[in-house]
Image 1 (cartoon, helix red, strand yellow):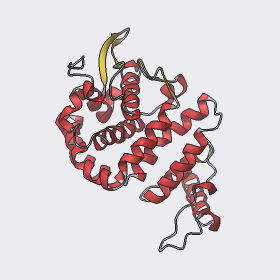
Image 2: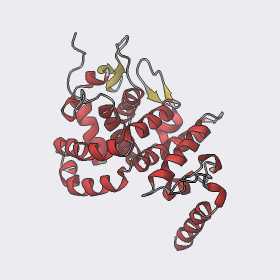
Image 3: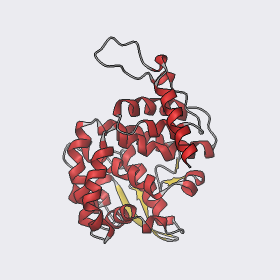
Length: 268
């Protein structure tokens, strides 16, 4: 394990020491040039680990990932990149440290089933998220995720490759970013207290084969945001799960409990 850790550090340092990794900007600080970042399924994890505490690098890696996801990838390759997209969104919005601080304080309440603790977490993160360009991070994340989502206008679900490999922690991070982005993009119209009502995002609960599932309300004006469609896909992913990993994770459990209740139909 020690050899692996040392190798990872050496690899990351090698990435960051390359002069052409930076742009030729004459500004006061170097800017990362995403065009010099060649992402593969083998090195994406190293790149993402290198972004911890470094939002500018996270934003550059995100741009490289957007470019990569435009290539003709097979579902398994796409699933690997999608798994790391949420962590990039967390770091590019500057939320990494803020989540650790707030989650540590509130984890006891979230873990005990206190749904208000999760709402408190989002509430505590919103200002930092907005100030750090979180809305753009959420937009990038949602658009990346849409590439792996089927039936975006009906009952959104992730493709099988991602659905079978997604981690509970990655899903929790993604949904935190998407929900904060949805609230930031609503100009204050969508608040923490609205999260129990899916109709505020243009979504609704409908009966499915395995219980309730989340559907996009058709012909909505304005149409649902990419954030909302991705949230619906994640809620269906959690609802379809047979492993119990989302139920046992305090964050995904709290998210599904809060969002999978409330009004089933949008008010006229």
